[in-house]
Amino acid sequence: MDQVLSSIVSILFHGTAYAMILYIVSVGLSVTMGLMGFANLAHGVFAMAGGYVTVTLMNGYGVPFALALLIACIVVAAVSAVLERMLYSRLYSAGELEQVLFTIGLIFMATAAAKFVWGPLPQRMTVPAIFRTELTFGTVTFPAYRGFILIAGFVLVALLWLAIERTNFGARIRAAVDNRRMAQSLGINTGLLFTMTFALGSALAALGGGLGAEILAINPGYAFEHLVYFLIVVAVGGLGSIRGPFFAALLLGISDFACKYLIPEFGAFFIYVATFAVLLWRPQGLFGRA
Amino acid sequence: MKKLSPIDAMVRSHRLRWWEALPWLAAVAGYFLYPDHLALGNQIFVAVLFALSLDLILGYAGIVTLGHAAFFGVGAYTAGILAVHGWHEPMTALVVAGAIAGVVGLISGLIILRTHGLTLLMLTLAIVFMLEELANKASWLTGGADGLQGMSVAPVFGAFRFDMFGRTAYWYSLGVLFVGWVFMRILVHSPFGRSLTGIRENVVRMHAIGTPVRKRLVTAYAISAVIAGVAGGVLAQTTQFVGLNVVSFERSGAILIMLIFGGVGRLYGAFLGAPIYMIAEDELAKSDPVYWFFWLGLLLVLVVMFARGGVLGVGEQALRYLRRKRS
Image 1 (tube, rainbow over the protein chains, first blue to last red):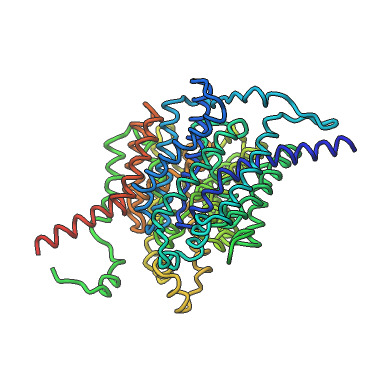
Image 2: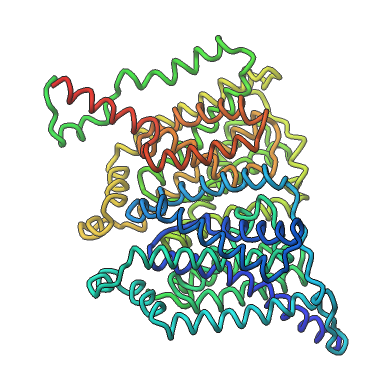
């Protein structure tokens, strides 16, 4: 009995930590999709870039963890804002096929560039010294770093929701998602809003990449390997929603961890079947509008 | 030259033109000019057939998919497993491979075509990952990561053995491609094919004039899966090996890129894009795969930014420009 309980606790703990990373990386994609209708498959590239910058700063230059994360976010946000102005914005009115091809091209280039600079092997992240202990609850022990991810994730989600629900900037985003033309008529500069939201989403992805480097290993194939999971989070959550992807990420993270823990043979298989079942029942996603 | 009205152009569009013989002449000439590269030729024909099948749903029906290799893989594994377990006759095995891929296409089409946009993209990806996982784990049937070995394929028509130089393979895959092309050509110029173009251009109007839109899309998706399955089956039979890469995301992506470079929705994009891609890959990728992907990515971005419609699209624009200048 004790063993069953400790397995359940362990699955919930690790699954939730995983879910936090998935959510932080994917939420920007959901907003981009809802705001501009842009199918940005290259979103994972920003997470990968954040991970590489964080790990390189920490390992190569001895920069403290928090500062390295901050620098990664700023660098990625700046680069993504430039990309958005120069390239992405030209394709907002283009067809879905063009957007898909363009972003796949970006992934190819980023993957090759990462392999060229950092080599094909995954980058090891050195967890800061304070998190290198273990937490013990009764019979179960957890790595402290995962606990930190869990807490940081919840704090971040709370901040994000507050920002979207309570600030003027958040209200503008919600207005533009609901009805872009109306928002424009009311004098909201949607072009600027798009750029800022895009940069913010990319910064969050970079944060997720850096924070989660210990869970989702930073390697050149990152953007392709995890693409389908990021897309599942967004599609199951409902495009354009902030809250939907959170619950979708929790569902995906915990069930993925449970499947791989309990039935390692067909773990990934069940996740896909479950995704099909959910979308057959609600094609617009759990929290999406029909 | 007399100017054609749009209606005339549409009515005449199915007529054969002289340049449509070019790919076939090139294929026959290739056999005699490059006797050392018959294996590459075989791979190119398979890729062209596969790209043709993708053109039906992407170019004509407008369904963007990243998972078309799922059906290619089902066809390849079907043909491979049949050949291992005693069904050695290649042509009938190909029919079975196409049929099973078609069933998978029909079922998955019924599910995923209820969605659209990013969700649809994700589901097409999920299907290919799911099947890859299945092929990997069911190693008692598929050979798993080691690949399916021990295929024995009987001579074509009972007379032409698959030789080690790839001569029979060359003609076999060219023959299957020809049949597939004739079928596709008839299909896209049929009322069914026209209705697909209509759905791509304006779904609301097609609904309004009473077209059963979803039924048409699912049918096209299943037909495309059949052709992709046949292409996979040909690859399995001619190379006598099936590896996990037949049902990978990489293959889905590569075939999409070939079609884009050639030009979508034109039936001949496949004939241009696939050989260019395969020959370039054969020349460049072996020396340095990292750079290959970088340039491939850059080229994709450039095509999307400046040359939508690929080689054929740019050619058409150039022709139109020249004609306007002359008149």
